Image 1: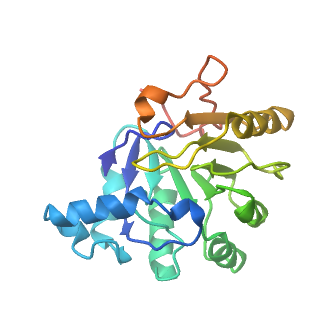
Image 2: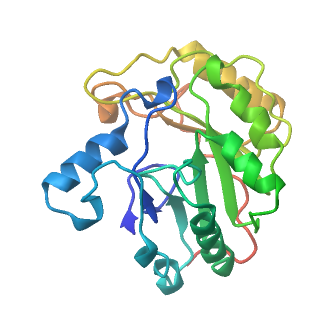
Length: 244
């Protein structure tokens, strides 16, 4: 596990590493760049660089965390990648179900795999398991409806990197929306009107809205204010989650 600078979580936990590109949001994948860097540094976990690799030795880690934490699961992979055995995914779900004092946030670009496993009963959803999909432009808006068909108690959208408008999103049974611009050496621009439209959709449907960043080549300088303020709304934490 590692502390995270991602604004909408506290730490990351990576029982799987590695992935491959499936849509335009993947073009400048930070995880791929980081995996190459970590391999070059000699970090054993990244010996396979960005090839999909499971790490069973990490499954015990959440049992040792005493304080409630908000945890981004697989920031360096996609838990529903086709190469990950369903048995290992079930092992990850067991850990999350066993540790209900923590909130586990999962994000996928492969909701069709998620839905397939959910419909046959492979996945056990506790209310501390938040399930999200990446929605970077209209080409992948179908991911929203696929997510909505699952039995996850908390469903969320990560519209990051937002590289196109997302008009008329189906937000019924969606509990959270995150929006953020792309950062890095050659980021694609995010227009303010796209962000404002998503915020209005969230307000209309009473969905918590979280604005992560404007992005750009200097994301710290660009900041994360929208209309002169920050937007940090999140779903309610489960009963077992305690703030110390």
